[in-house]
Length: 270
Length: 91
Image 1: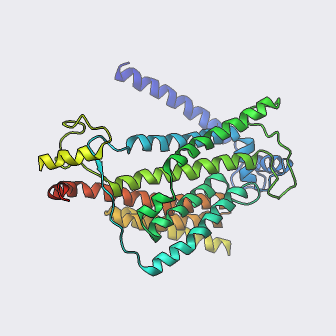
Image 2 (image 1 turned 60 degrees about the vertical axis):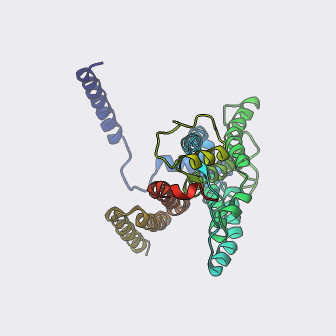
Image 3 (image 1 turned 180 degrees about the horizontal axis):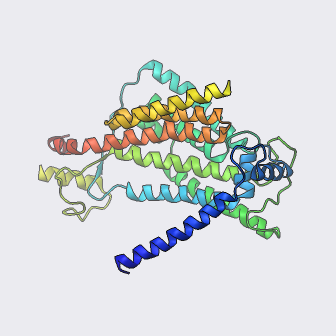
């Protein structure tokens, strides 16, 4: 396709979009009025499914399929980071030296850690009742774990963070969401339809599948953010560049992840 | 009362965002971005969007600045890697 044809295809598409968009805009209700057609319907649907937090109802009930897509975007983004930031063949690991932490900083971080972790878990569990949910609580809980990096050092963080487990957790969160959707199909309804009993309004057990999906997203986000930050921390703290500035992978093709061989190579060159 | 809070939060957001743009050093940009995240979280809270505010607070003022700082640290170490050539073969 030549540049001219491409330009024409773009112009025709843009003109079509402009016309449709203008027509749609004139069909919208006026801005800032008391009556909100979508809001009224969303609140009604949310209350009829005993979900006190309308946002959670919209995300995990009315538009649960959208949220599956959003969760998959996060999953793919973390996967991409893992692939891009993995240890290259000519890089080698070096144990970081522990730094001295001011006692006051240490005490504050150690005090905040359980508190922040609890807040994160609370926000995940109460997604159907109060503001928040799997994503928000997940990020809070994952960030809370990293207070250990501030309070002690990288070694301490690594000890409480078996990375493989979190990588599995991320995948499990994604899969749990799909399985919840398929369970609805097996129960004779549509994919991701809310088929569980709705429970008592404004309690932890309300909302049907909403808390289940929130938990799945929470698991995925906690694990995803921990894996993401772990890769960045790895690169910043542990992984060293090749010393001779040679192009990647050239020279030492024999040692895959073998750090000992790498060290020997450097000694020979130095 | 709510209007006053919204205006104050908007001014904070505009100020922090301008400061983030004017700062050329990524290391200084990170705390400014963190403050911008906090200001945006306040604005979203006053606009009655607590769900968005929570996301903004966690991602915008904690995770993003941390990732920027870690990236800067890694990039700055690159010339240092060559400097350490003599130490690589040490004990």
